[in-house]
Length: 305
Image 1 (tube, rainbow, N blue to C red):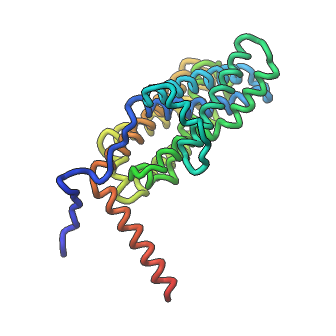
Image 2 (tube, rainbow, N blue to C red; image 1 turned 90 degrees about the horizontal axis):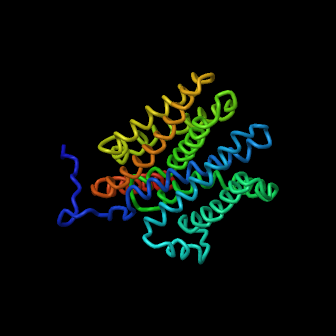
Image 3 (cartoon, one colour; image 1 turned 120 degrees about the horizontal axis):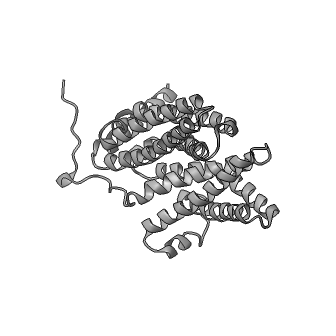
């Protein structure tokens, strides 16, 4: 039998260009935006249910992380006006355009809600702004995953079904992590449960990326990306376990929150690294294309029968 084909490109050049986004700017942007979205949604739910301290902490966290996320994005773009240029039009078919129109109003609403909380002024308008940010929160958690998956980068494009789930779960644990750090354990029971749900979603989606994408899954299991994602899984499991064990201990609860936040950082940097690696080897471009073509051919053959 013939040996498996070794895929090469002309003059040893990659078929695709590496992502041009900067590190650590873009992974931080992905992480901070997710924490902001989850925090805003938790804040919107916490107030009406009587968890006022959770609501306050989550509101302030949503504002701080959303502004920091915008700052990381602008630093990557190089000039602040480039971010404003993205708001000149709204293009529903472009995840980047839609994402810009999610991020900009979300940051404004989250900041207005936090300012009202801190000053005590205009409480009704502040509550309305917080509710608006809470509604946009789920989109903030996941739109960056759609943005990555819409590129030609093999590791991201092939993982288009799992990435939104991974980012949503990671964002949820990140938002819960902030609350666990700042609020006494007795007042974070619902948040603790949300963290366990987010951890489960994150672990399932991570397993899908590492084992369910054919040859492209290698990029999530090996090298820097593999190391970071293994660390993320360990930290996520540790965070979930410590959050359950720390129901009466402020120190253990804080450790759980720290583990959740560290896991979120590892996840974003790991996913970004996998994407970069997948553009360097032609096989991650060619093999999935051939497999898709073979599936289409088999489906057409079945239809002809």
